Length: 280
Length: 298
Image (cartoon, rainbow over all chains, first blue to last red; front, side, top):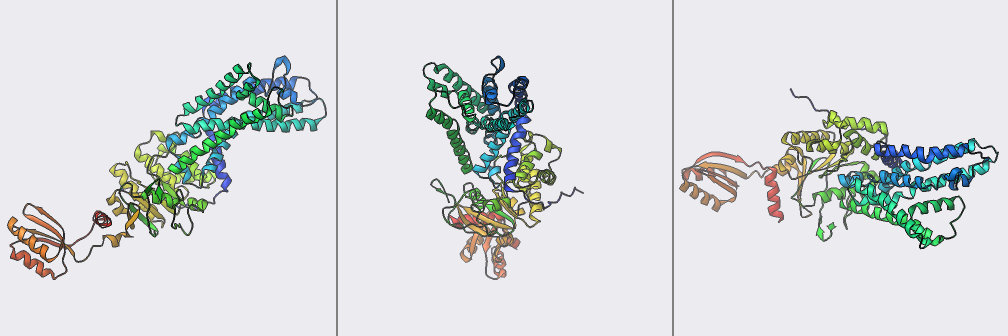
């Protein structure tokens, strides 16, 4: 006698709130990023080199309070923290790693249809994916900087805690900005190819090449400095901490550079996903 | 409903009851478009579509929470395993983490994906992938299920099992729309049929009614000499409507519409020295209905 097939059973659970569904998408991006050995190694090495060493130096340097100069200025032995090239390079690398598979995976597997057969539209899809990538980048750019700042405040000799807390708050803004600023570009490249490697390498190489080009031509005109994404990041930190832009940098061009780095990539990504939704 | 300049759905008017509904039609007939319209993935230029009283492209959240869709083409994320994949889409459909994992195992048990569920989907056979596609479409227990070519690429045993699974789901009172080219599969599984071509509904109705032939349509088989058979055929043709005649050696099979006394038919055979080998009312197959609908529709 053949085995009786298992009967179909109904599900009688309660549905979660709508935002939880997007959180599930974001969590999966986080989970799959950290299950990648490459990204995990990069993350650990980055934490040690970018945050742990400068953090220890800053904590051990005699200080009465947390100041913006400790974070964006030149420290002991010429060490810098948030404005170091190493920090930017690790942001480039992690952005490339995290975003490489974000949309290319769905293009490769034609899995958009499974998302869009759920109560998910293009906007929700992008929020979920960007949200996940932001969580990973936030774990590198935001969380450790906050930890370093808290350690500095905990070891300060003065009692101007309110002033230190203000800097801590600005550091939160700076960390959030650093976590987000290059994501649109990486996600855009991921939406243009089915190949994870093309998206990842393309993203890093483009950011790196722009850095080189900006650096090379800045000798001819300071405006070229704004082609360098690393400079855009550093100038933004300075603006966030209230230091203002360097005198040779045109504020309008800075805003334009920031706009070009973020808004058109989001539009292109939205258009790509929308066209995939229409093809479903 | 148009795709660029091609009319995909044209004045289509159908009412779909609960049970298993077979959606039939050739390639490009508009089957997939109809499914996408029902899911709110496409919005027609005019007309009205409601699912349980809701408009799919307006009440997207409610409609899609209550609908499961199994696409025709590959759509599985090959780098994930079946448990992660099914539970992930369960969560997107509004299930709690634990609930989604538990339910993923339940539906994977139902579709008979065993220990392989922990392997990456990329390593699965076509049949296994079809099962996982079915599992993701039922994980959130939708009341309406839309299956686009569910047996595509499966071996005969796999097809049989897939049809059994669909029947089992159908037994729970859900509405299941199965789009397929495989007429015999639909005939075996569906309770209701919708035949469409060029975006128009050619025939719709309950399977039993559709297959129920006209009582006056008969199949008669006679045997005898070629010459006598020829005469008999000519005489029959002059007296009634002949749908089909098939001569094989010394045997003739005729499908005809005979509204007179049957004795007359036997008498005619006797007069032509023919033996009546069989005489029965015609039972239609879905294939007959399908081709008849096409002849009329076109």
